[in-house]
Image (cartoon, rainbow, N blue to C red; front, side, top):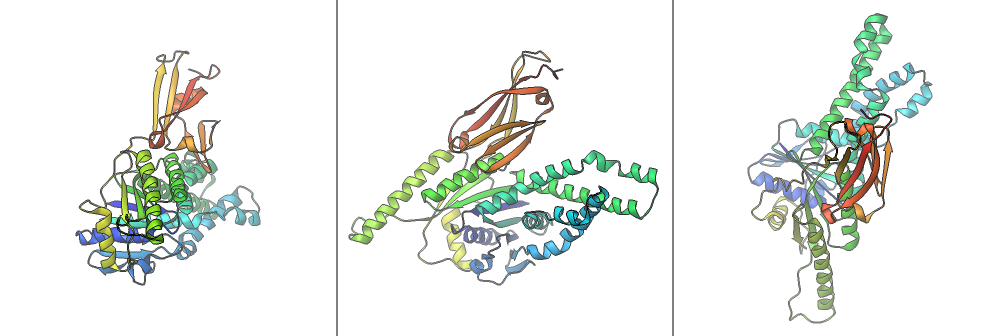
Length: 412
C-alpha cells in the first residue's frame, strides 16, 4: 500500500496535480483513491464530478472522496470528549472547566488525517493520493500525531494506564470504576491511532510527500521553509513539482508581449536553477509546463500527467535521505568521564531561518522559525549536558550537530 500526499501554497495547483496523479495510476491498472482534506473541496471541480465523504468510482479503478470533518467531529470525537471529561472530573476539576479543557484546537485536522489512515489501511486500494490543504494547515496536520502523542503521555502515562486492572481489583467493581475503565480504554485507543498515524507518515516506504510550487521567489521561499519544518518532524519530502512553467517564446516574436514572455521565462528559469542546486540529488524536481487550457475532467488530467511523469511511476519512492537523527561517540569509551557524543539532526535549510535550541529535562527542544519539535534524548544523553552546537553542510544537506559531554552530577 502506498500513500502520496500533495501540498503547497494555496493556488499553485496541488489539487489538479493530485487528481492527475490518481487518474494516471488508475489507467495503469491500479485501484487508486484520491481524497481531499482541503476545506475548499475543489477536488470535485478538477475531476468534474460531484463528491462527498463516501468514495465513488469515477471510472474503472479511479475512486474519489472528500473528507467531511463535521461528520467525524460529531461521531468519534464526541464520544472521546465524554471520556476525557470523566478523567478530568475524577481529578477534581470543575465540570465547566473540564468542558473547556476538552475543546482541542486542531481536532478537525487530526480527524481528517485519521480518516485518511483508515482508508489507506482498509486494503481496498493499491494507492491513496491525498490532496492536502495549503502548506500552513498541512504542517499543523502532519505534526499533530507526534505532538498529541506527547501531550497524552504527559497527561496520563502508559505505565499508569497499565495498572488500571490493579486499581479496579483493589477498589472493587462499581459504576465509577467501569466509567474509569471505559475512559482508559478510549485513551489507549487514541494513543494507538496516533501511533499508527505517525508510523504511516514517517515511513518513506509507505508514504511520499510531494511539495507543489510555482517558479516564483515568494512561493519558493515558503517551500524552503516547508522542507525545513517537515524535516524537523522527521517527515521526508521525496519530490518537488514546479507547476506552470512558461515556455520560451520563439526568437521571431517581437513587441511588448514577447518582451514580457522572455522576462518571465528568464526569471522562472533562474528560480528553477536555484531550486535544483539546493535540492541536489536528495529531492527530485519535476517541471510542468503552463497549459493553455485549464485541465478539468479525467481525460484532460491524463494529458497533464504525461507532462509530469512521462514514463515514470507516479507512486515510486524517491531517494531516501537516511535517518533524521544520528548519535555518534566522538571521544572516550565506556563510562569514561572524558566521553563526548554528537547528536546529528538532518535539517535542510536551517541556516536561512532563526534557530533555537533548548534542553528541557530529557528532551531537546528545537525551533526553526515558527516550527518546534521536542526530541526525546537517548538514554546515554540524559546523563549529559549540552556543550555546543553547529550547522554542517548547506541547502538540503544541512545538518544540526549538538555536542554532549557527561554531567558529573549524574554520570554513571
